[in-house]
Image (cartoon, one colour):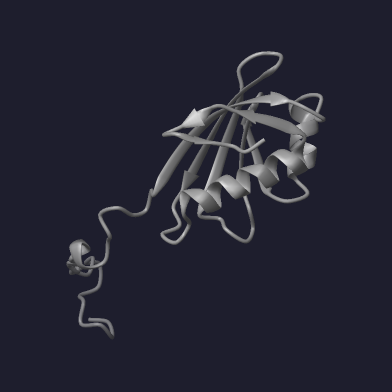
Length: 134
């Protein structure tokens, strides 16, 4: 026998632990996704997706999982995720996913105005009666 009480040549028995967690006590049923907003976008000062990506990189973490699709989030608020997809030569669709409990729709719209001003795109469209101020 070795030091652990197991005969030589035999595999020791492994006892599996059980983990029981009551998820209801920790998860808010309205969390983690609080808002999903869809908008159309068009190129403004930015000329193409590479230009948009370059401009976004100044303010956001940016991934390009496939050509014409950018996924980005701010280092300060990584609970707000954007997915921008180019649909045609003029622009495409922008989806914003908010997982921050304390961000209101008004705050998200303010963020979209900043995005429009700093990244060189025009954001169009309406979602649930909210329109970006011109």
